[in-house]
Length: 230
Length: 230
DNA sequence: GACATGAATGGATCGCCGTTCCAACATGGG
DNA sequence: CCCATGTTGGAACGGCGATCCATTCATGTC
Image (cartoon, rainbow over all chains, first blue to last red; front, top):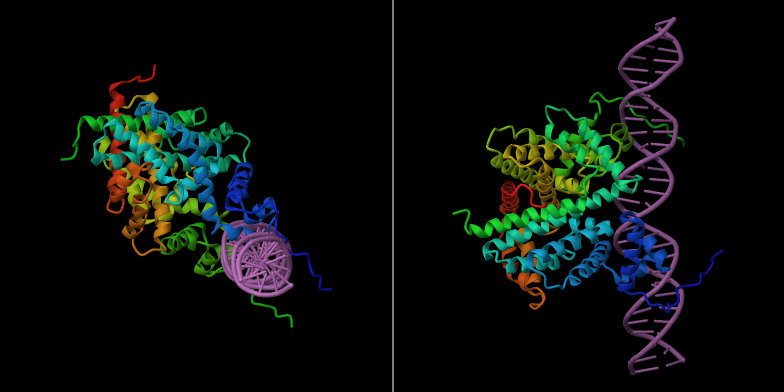
């Protein structure tokens, strides 16, 4: 029997890129990166995958838009007039917290930074370094180092979150890695064996900030010797 | 007609995890990350995908083994007895060059570092910082910052390589991004607009090394004030 | 030398993915 | 009123990672 099905009726709640991105963020936050498929998205929006492609170029486009939204919220909330160094630390921590809350943002930032919110991050760090008095010739490298640190930690956090998903607990997961590290060859891995114990108890957020401070200290040292490589 | 096909005959050139990983590296180097599929691998080895799964747990296992091999080659070639700071710079550059030559290594390092050669990298940096006289309490954070910088750049290089693949030339690609940056709102993005011109002409390797030097300078400053946070 | 055993093989198959295609509608302008 | 246009939703496509399984061979046993 050839059944003529009821076909698409125009919806009252119109589909739009904004609504699609919003739904995508909900799915990503709820189920992680693996949960975002066009089928799940279509089900969530009660439509078909074809309709979504009318508003969105492809999955990268969708992920970039979702990431952009989250990062923009962090950067624009950072309108304070604190001293430059404190502003840099605050921006870095804001990004860290956003990535920590939405691990898929970390994946996207380290996978396709050009598509996402890179200019916003660059501007946030760079303009503050300018205020700090970093010489123009070193501004690009110094800013890039801060940005790389954020993107690097973003990728690591995302990788960790991907592994946590299958396990119970973060400390238990790091503990099992610490055990592996502690059992390495003492002749070949003396340092790794020594720090293994710190792995399960260390605070990612504090370690991230310690890295930012280290880089900022290096930048401060740079200011005192303007041309270190003659 | 029920055709009884010729079935698998035992091979003289035995399949092994080593041979599989070797073939995987060849495919990855030749065609990039996207080229490594179990079908392509089976064709390359003149076998079926089922046979490969007998030696390899899954794709992550295969990628981890391939990455491990490349990184191990870099780290073990670094047996020199140079001064600690020079040794750290040399190790960092060696890793950078390996990632540059095999972009898929960068992807894997930033995507699943725990599976891969993380302890080797950690040991390489950490033991040299110990030699440098970095106080024990700061060694873990300092080492992590160096490692994060390497992993962060690894991810970025891999992301760039992924985009180069479709384009002709690296400078042209960065040039098009620089154009976008130069056209951003002057009120909102003064810094980004100013550094946009440097984007297409800057040297990734030098910038990476500048970041390492910045971090090392910060670590040197740390040595002069042993307990910055009382 | 015949046979049982289990490691190893390779091709078919499964379920899911991103993406494309297209017939079926809704709506506003002529 | 009717058609052109913009949208919708679901079927279909090719390809992926992974699994399944009939089949083969090397080896140990008697």
